Image 1: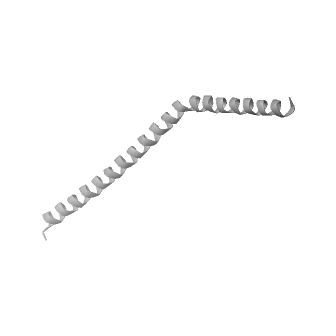
Image 2: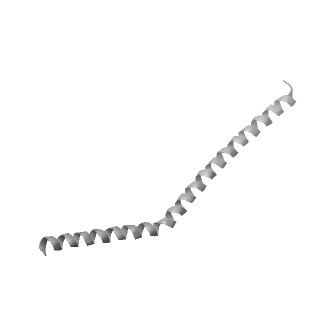
Length: 73
C-alpha cells in the first residue's frame, strides 16, 4: 500500500474509534438521564408515601385500641 492509502486507513480507524467513544458517551448520558428522572419521580412521590404510611399506622392503632377495649372493656 502507498503512504496515502495507509494515512486514509489510519484516519478511517481513528474516526471509527471516535464514533464508538461517542456512542459510549451517549449511552452513559441516557443512563444518567433515566436515573435522574427516577430520582425526581421518587422525590415527588415521597410525601405521598409518608401520608399513606401514616394512615396505615393510624388504622393499626385504631384497630389495636378497639381490640384492647373489646378484651378489657
